[in-house]
Image 1 (spheres, rainbow, N blue to C red):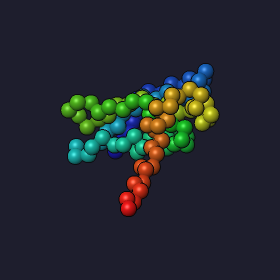
Image 2 (cartoon, rainbow, N blue to C red; image 1 turned 45 degrees about the horizontal axis):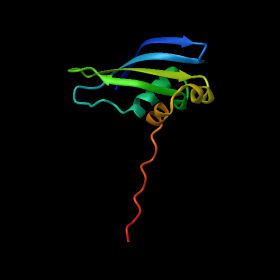
Image 3 (spheres, one colour; image 1 turned 120 degrees about the vertical axis):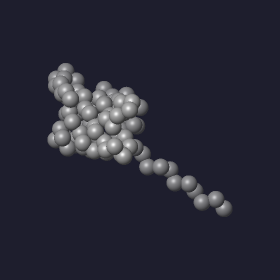
Image 4 (cartoon, rainbow, N blue to C red; image 1 turned 90 degrees about the vertical axis):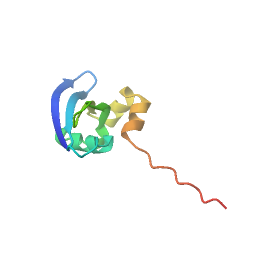
Length: 103
């Protein structure tokens, strides 16, 4: 997986960076998971992965390239004020509930 930042814009009013990115995955590879892209994007932007939120990521038809939009906040409190709940759930996968043993 190779991550490339296409454009980056600072938004001082919302205290975040707005990023458009491109992910090239190999010809035999599948689209990487949000979590993998989020970690890679966080290391590229030099912020904690808890502050990065991927809004959209889609593989272009017939290619091995995915395009996406993400935001990186200055603080987690600021992110909680702005980002909707469903974006938090997408970007912070919860552990799968363990099935109780049936008796």
